[in-house]
Amino acid sequence: MVRERRDPPFGGSVVFLLMNLPLGVVAFGLLTAFTAAGVGTAVVWVGVGLLAVVVLAVRGGARLERARVYALLDRYIDLPYLPLPAGPQSLRWKGRLKDPSTWRDLAYFFLLFPLGLVEFVLVTVFWSTSLALAGLPIYFRWLPDGAYYFPAEDLRWLTVDSTVEALPWAALGVLFIALSVALTKALAGMHARLANALLGTTVAQRRRMERWWEDAEEKNLVAG
Image (tube, rainbow, N blue to C red; front, side, top):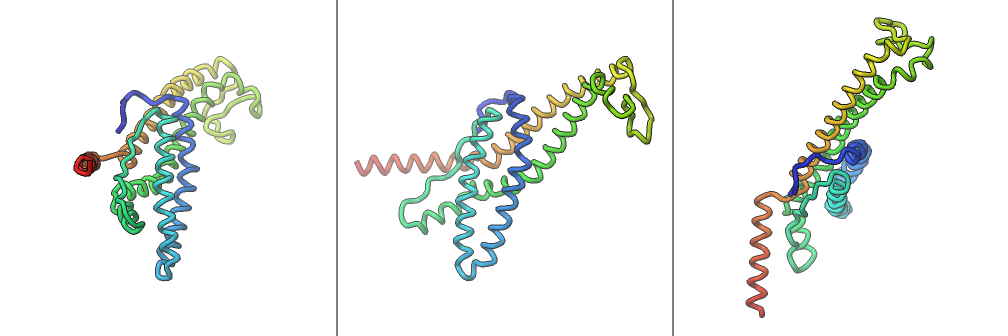
C-alpha cells in the first residue's frame, strides 16, 4: 500500500529512472535464460531445480525492488506474501506457487526492461536537450567555426554565433528544464504506482491475510 501521494523526490527519481534500464536488461536476460533452461530440462528433473531457483530469486529480487522504491521514491510497499503452510517442503512450495504475488513479481521484472528503456530514453533526451539549450550562450564559441548550426552543420537553417542570439535559446532551455523536472517526477510517480500494483498487496490478498491471522489467533486460543 502506498502511504502518501506526494511527489517523489527529484534526485531519487532521476537515479531511479536511470537505474531501471540496466536492471531491466539484467533481470530480463537472467529470467529468460533460466526459465528457458528450466522448462527445457524439466523432463530430467534438472529443470525443476532451475525453476525453483527462479521462483526464489524473483521473490527475493522483489523484496529488494520494494526497498529501492522506498529508498529513492519514498513509497512504502507492503509485503503481499501469504504465510507459507507448516509441514514438508512440498506444501511450502505449493504455497509459493499458488500465491498470486509470486507471478505478479515475475510480471514486474519482465516489464522492467521495456519500461526502463522508455523511461531512460525520455529522461536522457529531455535533459540533454534542456541542458544543451540552456548552456548554449556559454559553449557555442567553442564549437567548430565558433557557431551553433541548427539542425546540423551541413544544413544551416539557423545560425547562433553570438551571445545575444543564444539568449532566446537559453530561455527555451530553462523552460525545457522545468518540463524535464515535471516529466521526471511524473515518470517516477507512475512507476511507483505500477510497482505498488504488481509488488504490493491487493484487496483480496489483504482479506485472505486477515482471515489467516484470525484463524491463527483462534487456534492459539483453543490450544491455550
